Length: 355
Ligand code: KG4
Ligand code: ZN
Image (cartoon, rainbow, N blue to C red; front, side, top):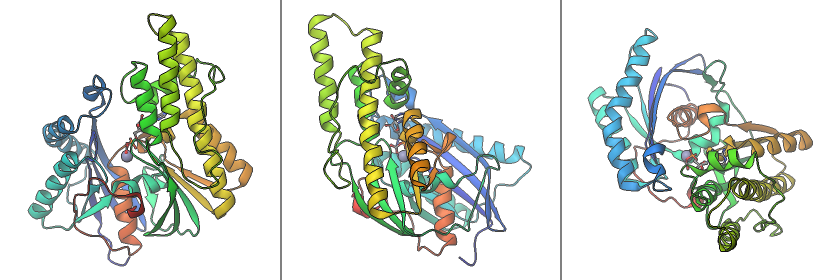
């Protein structure tokens, strides 16, 4: 990329996080000046999952507040808000939510006279591991060939071949529930709330992973296809059986179910990643999406990376769950590496092959 903007604003509203980030770009490095985020998780928790129209209403309500929080952080750094480009998530996600961010981006773009580009949310997750927490920045000069992308979120469990900037090909993934969705549904079945992943993984830390022998879905399919619905149903039957003998779920049962479920859900994923490494011989594995926050998964992936010598580039901290930093990163990196970007077009349910 030859004429790179010096500043960029990014906006994310694809699901239940309202988020803005602002960057300065200098000498092939993009520095995060400020970001602001509001998570609606508490509002959706009592429903056991995201309620799309409530999510859109909350985005409408929170956008002005989160945006002014961003502006005040920028001022606190002694900087001016003057973006030369705006990136906004335009899919995949919940369409009422996506529209709120895209409309905001278009209005700001018109007002400021700067271009607005749509960014695929999953591309944000894919490269979020390139963000350096210590310096709050990321380098633009990343080259890679023949790498593997692993996207594990509430809506996706996907394996991609990542050959160059903009060259992503879907290799396989879930045929039904995504891994994060399975964590969320198990949490709901156990009456634990939303988002389920962090709650289930905390409970799992006190449970016996061998208490229940849950199925490892599609473990031996000799491809990168996955399914989590059988595992989810097995958990449901275990809970129903338990409730035939007891009036309510006790803490030990909950912890054991969480630990046994987590073992099955993570082990099958790690085995599929191992299979992908053996098949594709990637030089790096980019891992992103909310489920990377799972401590058991993270530990297993580190062991795998040590064993195979394949470099793991995984999201950390605030970059694991939905945020606007990763949207700015994908936008800036794609622009820098000459990938053609387009004005946003809301796409609520992109097929995996369109990643
Ligand atoms: O990437 P993300 O924030 O949003 C989507 O794009 O979907 O991912 C959210 C998903 C939720 O399903 C959540 O339960 C899951 O990531 N998650 C976890 C953990 N933390 C978040 N799953 C397992 N273990 C965790 N610690
Ligand atoms: Zn996401």
